[in-house]
Length: 154
Ligand SMILES: Cc1cc2nc3c(=O)[nH]c(=O)nc-3n(C[C@H](O)[C@H](O)[C@H](O)COP(=O)(O)O)c2cc1C
Image (tube, rainbow, N blue to C red; front, side, top):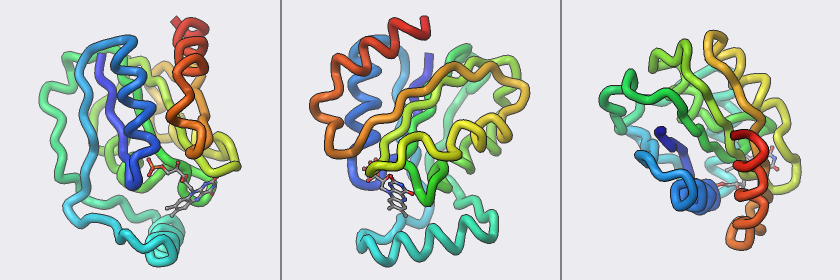
């Protein structure tokens, strides 16, 4: 199993670590060549422009031997109602056909939004399991929700 995720402010990383404690496997944080701005207004503006243009940022992180994983957990914050651009890059860059993709998502109130639909468009030949959505402010206390979700999908 592989757990891979993008996290700008740590919420999605927290859930990734909770999943890793329960299922094991490899865990890889996706980093972009150009880091996103720390300033919230600046990153919101940039992310909106990237969404409108379909831009996919170059990833500094390289996942070796993607072929050796059957199950890939993919974690993302919600950016403007969908997956963050670095996760879009990951799903586009790697050959994921035949693999099982398990999304996990953090957000500030909007829930899954269009994220699952957009993930399925980017990996049409993968099996997509039900994802979990956790509010950013609740990530530290999400252990039981994460456990229940994992039990429900496996
Ligand atoms: C550019 C940008 C756009 C966002 N858009 C949304 C949104 O549409 N809906 C929402 O609920 N939260 C939105 N958020 C909040 C994040 O999804 C939320 O804080 C998330 O937990 C951050 O995860 P991270 O700490 O792993 O980066 C947005 C945050 C950023 C930076």
